[in-house]
Length: 180
Image 1 (tube, helix red, strand yellow):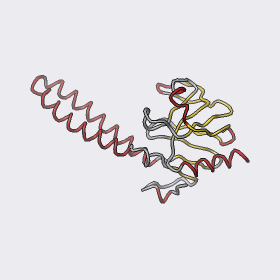
Image 2 (cartoon, helix red, strand yellow; image 1 turned 45 degrees about the vertical axis):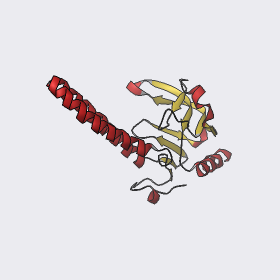
Image 3 (tube, one colour; image 1 turned 180 degrees about the vertical axis):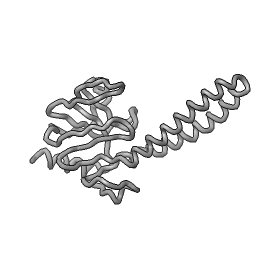
Image 4 (cartoon, helix red, strand yellow; image 1 turned 90 degrees about the horizontal axis):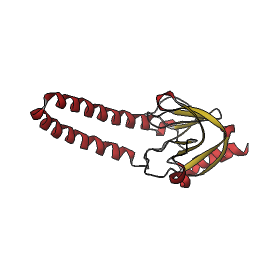
């Protein structure tokens, strides 16, 4: 169980806080991608400038946008822990959509081992940092919650896949709420 003081600069919101980025290797992955993007942008932009200055500027703007997106997402991942507060579980992974679930609506907390089989199901919401890495937990809901997907589409979700760093403490807290 992590407290706000342990979350490297996270301030505000009381409640029980859980990180999800420390054990995943996400920080190293993002910085490696930023380094590769900077080198690729410099090389390709130089070659494109010799061939077509307009394409050079388009490539440069798009590449800088991707680099900024990666850094903003990393910062959001670090600053947005999973929060349990006032009998609600709030999940926001990076700059992805937020899902708030009343703890009464949680039916079961299971292992995320069925992720590969069920990830394409429309009732499943994937909140893992890496799509190629299996999440730790699957949260099964009693009743579907409405979720606003990309481009404003609404869909009902009954299962959520995600990971946390402190697995045992999270599992114990959720199971304690289920027994109440």
